[in-house]
Image 1 (tube, helix red, strand yellow):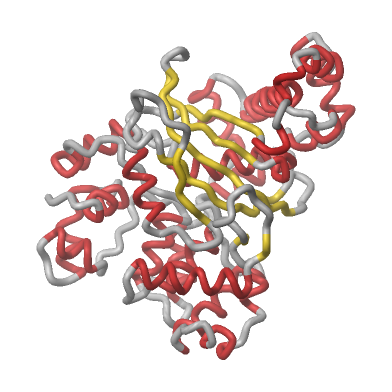
Image 2 (cartoon, one colour):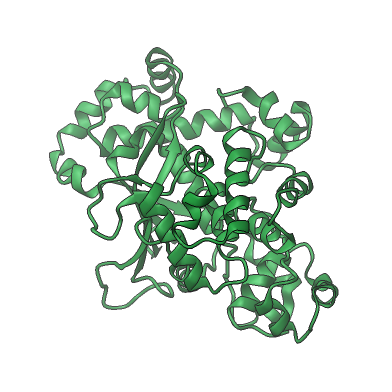
Length: 405
């Protein structure tokens, strides 16, 4: 909220700040500023009690502009100074044991159902070597949610509230908390990312589509979703990464695209230390790939046209001409993407579906989609999918998972 204020957020959403304030108040019962302040304080309280982070770092990680403002807000809300709460928490020293190795643990709620097995299967088939990997959680006698034993790990690069960038690992696992009568996703975050916790958690919510309303989606999808409830629309930790992967995936198999992406990471990715030998690099930044020549990219096996498209995309993103975030103008972004030679409707729609979080994205020319629909042209696929608006993106995931209309 402090980075540009409410007016900046309203402008990015294409509404007035007065309208945004009115809608937010009707939905949550508080103003956007009050809501953001409460979220910052809750995060700060968690960091004070569960980590060894200095109070100054806690204030900055929670999004406060200054330690003084943090101390005033915290003392006013909780009737205790942050340093005093820290001393109480420090009395239970066992809370901090293994913090450096185990990371910070958070739990994010969602509206059930969530098909964790389907989500992790989707991510597993697209894991980039060095950046992402699947693992197994400690086994319970009886799994409480579908696919609960599977964990997803990866390296992320996120901005801090101060404008810096940090890299580190995260681990996601699905679980159902019966004691709290809730449905939760557990997120383990590397200490190296402690200065950017809000950004990390926001991206986790985006990737796992935790804000979805499965009931509303399934009501429109009808028979397509029967027996497959809780399927989510997988998002992106980094929109640029998804766009690069979409270019690499043009007219090749998912496995071939993974191989090319892995080579790209090994050549131009940033090395990052993690507890797992299979996680070694952060995905290359746009500026790094923008500096490559066509021949550089061809040296790892890319075709010339694909190399040129990737370089032009990287330059547009690194120079700020193209943003690939969920709050952009989707039609304008699709137009800008398709202005890049080598990027067509399929690639743009895939980017819209995952990087922009557009629930109505529909890559009509996708071979798997047309086969599942029993049609031979993209136009026929679009006509067949009209009944699923505005959730065609979810329909695509169902079709890729083997559902048939």
